[in-house]
Image 1 (cartoon, chains in turn red, cyan):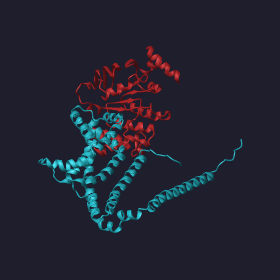
Image 2 (cartoon, helix red, strand yellow):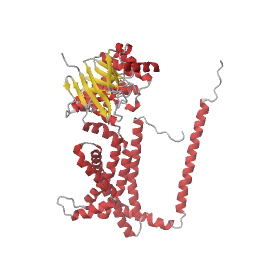
Image 3 (cartoon, helix red, strand yellow):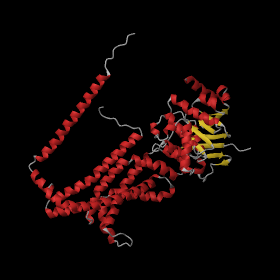
Length: 247
Length: 286
């Protein structure tokens, strides 16, 4: 049997004396979509940044396709090329046209031929309903369009897994749907992903497994029906009750 | 329910708009005439004006000196162009060394800090003097001996110190999330700098950068203290010869002929940048 795409064992991380992650264990199998839920500051973003090696973990191991990637001294660059990360604030490159944003990783990090990268970039934008925006600059796009471009940018390098960090949290409510639709499409294509989200309904009908994070620990995880309908832990119950009370 | 008649019509608004436009044109025309006309009248009616005109604005002296000043100015232009390119490259390197927190670069970083502190703190004319007279005195093998080259190096060193601080401000103004996004794509740190950070930083500091280059264009005149016959030097020689300052006015005209177009060029680049990035500056009355 092939190893899980991602495996986290006892991952810890602290920033300036504050423990942000306190021993995270998690496996993500091929084609699996995991939703990370939890209050702001529970460690969701940090976890995703650590998996993509943007932040160095303090202890524990992360394995990608069974191969440890958090060994000290290992060059993070080739490993990052095998993962895609999409940010809450899009982080598009404002000085580049949309198409150049999308193809930068393929042409520079993976030395794909420029014309070929452009063709596949245009095809992907077309598929995301952005075919006519390829030559625009990111600042002239709506938030929803920018986030779709950012997802296209993360996909063009054919990652093994995509990590999505609250990708709809910076969007106006009416723009959330267009981004979530794309994520559903990726899921249908069998993309392996971890998505940190505050969209509980989306997490419920989309994810294969839901992980509830609090204070840097996975308090509870399981299929969405179980987490949302019959949470076992009092912390999960409180978190969900607070969310329900708000709407 | 009855529809109320509109209180204002499209024509009313258009009329008001035209009225406002006409009024602002009239006001600016009148204020221009009053201010400029007043200043000109003030100078022209001053008791010393006829003498100043002879001393500074003599058509015949202008005619007989302009050609030589112009050929001296050609040296300014060449020095400016070469020094500018050297400054751009060198200053960016210094700024990168100072911005990047790589342990290997630590000694270089210290060196860069000392260099910038020293060359920003010393008058340019002093550095030109030192390079023009002291360096040839060392009789170092392989060192250029021409006063033009040496004073060019002095200018490049002084201006690189200033410009590196402009670049550094630009580099530090780019949000770390941009580097994060570049690295997440699998770019190496060097690629992230080259394709993502530096292009944005340079764009952002273009106006102050050009400001420094306009200053450099004028400061080329400082090399005259160690010998090279550039426009200011040539103008001085002619002024002494004719007992008339008009050649200096000719030199001033030549400097302006370069600096003003440069300024306009950057204004246009800025405006284009604004448009592309969807930004609009709307201040003042409509």
